[in-house]
Length: 244
Image 1 (tube, rainbow, N blue to C red):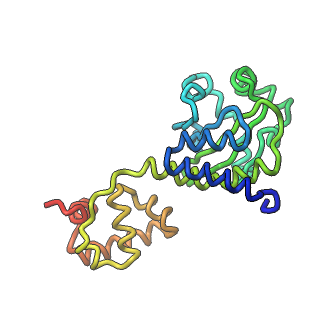
Image 2 (image 1 turned 180 degrees about the horizontal axis):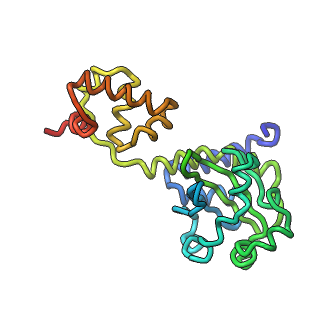
């Protein structure tokens, strides 16, 4: 991958990163589409077990196929679901739709014949940008010709983590002002857990962000309660926000 990404490509990729950071997800998706050379770009959220779509961000709202009930009913048959379960579409590594299914299989899918082909989509480059035990997000770049180069894939793999970060920033709840005197009593890890509590994160979410187990999060919370003379998460939030 590194041998194909020249300084010029990296400069252009950096411009897309700046768009994600300064202008938001939709603008960053548009920049990524221009960089790779695609007609439509979207990032879709879906539950694993039900394969139900729960949200989508697109560069242009009119391109959001979630507006169509028929599309939502058919999307569970998208080859990306089976590919991810089988390990052919791992987190952070892109693959083309035509890598995952041959044209004969695709032409048998109403999803492909009723929605993708009529709007000119022949192939897609797909990349799972975020996943946990319940749901995931997949970046989809659609183009009107088949095939994606190794350079296209390298650029998408490089920028996928920045898309995940942009989504996380936009979804992050407002941070309550933290009582500095209270946090001085805590260790660095306990402060991280306490700050996550101010963002209304549950134990599982805190564990995922910090790379620890939910049980370890609970142990940290017990220590925080003991040090601050508290008994509950609600009391902790009130204490850290400085509310009386």
